[in-house]
Image (cartoon, rainbow, N blue to C red; front, side, top):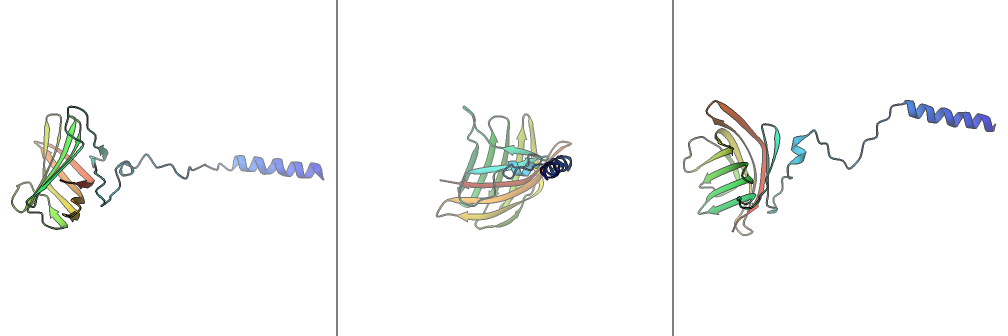
Length: 172
């Protein structure tokens, strides 16, 4: 009887070993999804900014003597948002006459009211030709502006796509 139970246990271990089970970590984030490397979409004034530039994560950071990682200025219903990678690159969004939440078309020709955007890297300046800005929270009491954005920019014949953009910023 002992031999039978021993052989049964050995057979179970061998069959489990040959079953090609793959261990999947429960708390590990997938690294092949670039969106998972962006900050979450929040509306709390978390001072976050991120997007995908041609499908690659764009994370902001600052370094002396460069500009701060994020910048938001909102005065007289005009808005300026920037996410900087030290001196490497900048994503900027400018909005005129933004008085409430909503979806705004990003256009090449900046008019009032209107929104335009720019992506700059090295010596290239990609002006937005199409896109969308979605202001999800515009709170003058807590001084928070949050939303999402996407646009296509051109510099001569070169094109770049900014997608999955999100920001959650405070202003003074």
